[in-house]
Length: 295
Length: 248
Image 1: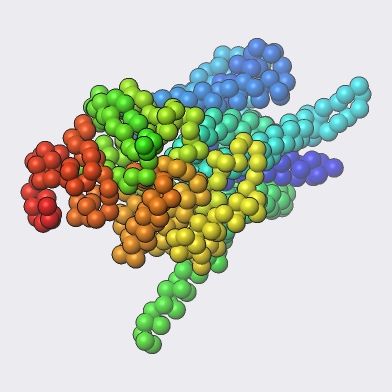
Image 2: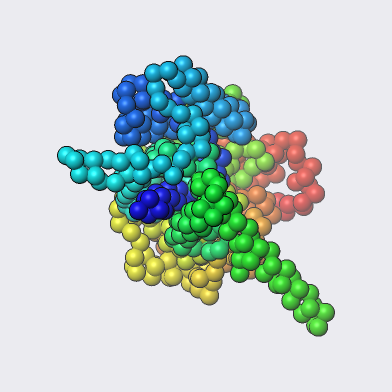
């Protein structure tokens, strides 16, 4: 049963991250995902201090808010002349540092382990269960992630064409009257949500791996957006399964193994993808030069 | 009496403190092909983007068929510069053209068979039927430009803004674009084109708008496209003009 909960948690994290990651990669905003995953920390701590509990939904709210603040600040600095990558670096490290200070100030009262925030511990998800009138409903993390996945699917399902056009050609989107900024912040809000729901299990750092790596792998494998999103989620889930297996065999960090597995799948796609892979490209070149010689 | 398709009044734009577009006002009658001409950095693309509300303007009003642009979006089609998008995006030519229909679909409706049919018709008009399923990164520059034009046709607008549609395209595509502009004109549509090739202005456009931050001259091409006006618009860069041997 423990295996089941861990795998289910991993699959939910991978699905949430994989779907959103596809859009981040296509909009060339991979590093924004990184920034959000770190700067939600103060949001989590402040929500914790206010609500006084590790109530997941309060944290989700606090962190989503901080995620939006992060994106807003990065945008603002960029527009006032700071280099794009520098403004990302400034904003997320500063906010993360505020979070670290807040955690250390409250370390005595609160049971918020910094290691746990950074690296997560998926092996413990089944300990923190949710029970209603005595009935055990399973791990809280699974409920939270399930809720997040539903929200992501609902929002993207309703506004798929808007998200697609904003990613491909924001100028036309704006000309057609689509509120580009609204969809930008909506996407960022979803990324914040996914990050926070995932951080207890895989941690703030490794969640970036599941946001970006499976999406980048999927990008190499298909030429259609819909397929890329599905593949991205699928590859993410596959990574968590392979990673968990490896972690059990090696007796190593589960989250670490999952992201390593994702990286391994990426390398395989990079080498052997039928269209964009290194091997296929080399073969195409060889065939072309042979034709040239033959002609 | 023909109607005004576009009326721009006192449009000014600045990036940081530098003015890029200064108090530009003009009207375009329905059914005209208008070339927007001027040196690099004259604000030609900025004019289009500000008119469409894609960048903030300091002052100015834009009216399309007598009403503010924001109420008339559906009447306006837009062809951005080809380099403005990532052609490695995972999608095919048909799908890009379908995007032109999004404005007609409202918030929640998804593109269906009808949108695909319209998109195929538009691809046929630019001679790209055979490439509908092609991944967009595998198209040549000229083919990509035709896909963009087909997408604008799918918008089914009355007034079109095109930003440098002739840049980096082959001769066949250039001819196809010109035929398309003529066809749009025949249907009573109005097209405003940012253009950089002075040698073809007289051949392609009914009216020309000479721009260098300020509006330098605007009117029928045969009246306005004169050496004096070009001197005034291009200023010190005129050596380049003489080399190009513009026949005036």
